[in-house]
Length: 258
Image 1 (tube, rainbow, N blue to C red):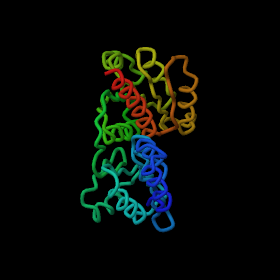
Image 2: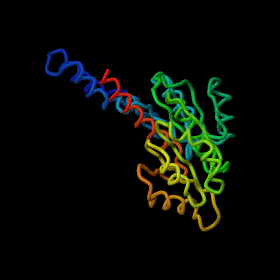
Image 3: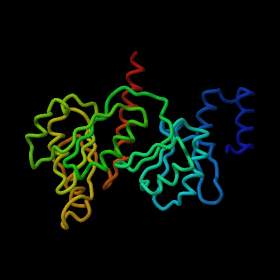
Image 4: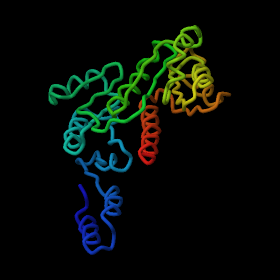
């Protein structure tokens, strides 16, 4: 938890008027973490600093380690979320944690919900059905973090009329996450139609020369369309968090104008 000496010094500075209460809150953002045995240090103040709580990366952790982390995190956050959690591990955890929800396609487990509700919508588009696990990771992450999510699946460039038939969803979007494997051309097409930021997510779906998503990644990085940012291969979670930060910033500017 918070280092006692550091906290006492901070509170004394506030009491003596050396810093204001608002300055104290800013300093407090960087004090709080909690160690769990010798394998984890939980950053309880990440939501205070960044707007979103720390999330558990499940790969490489044992079910018992994940259980202990969840137990500590839920005492300090309205949302506890674990990504890349396999179904058998989730089943084991649900036997011990009754209110743990599991989203099998996204491989996400969660307790609770972010208490904040944000204006704006995250629209997520996939090239093919095989891209759905990555897209659902983005969608569930966005919803758990307090955003409205719109889904548009299987509209890749091999049948471009499918995308054009939903052009109104593209032109009316606040921010777009476009998920594609194979050659990864869909974000360029979407960005040529959209008037909002586009976050491109390459997936590891494709034949041998796709090199596990590297081909799609390079296509997206070399796009001639403007307004595209690219995250790592299969990183639906990262795309959703970036989209969320952009919408939160837009919310902040909107509140200043009011």
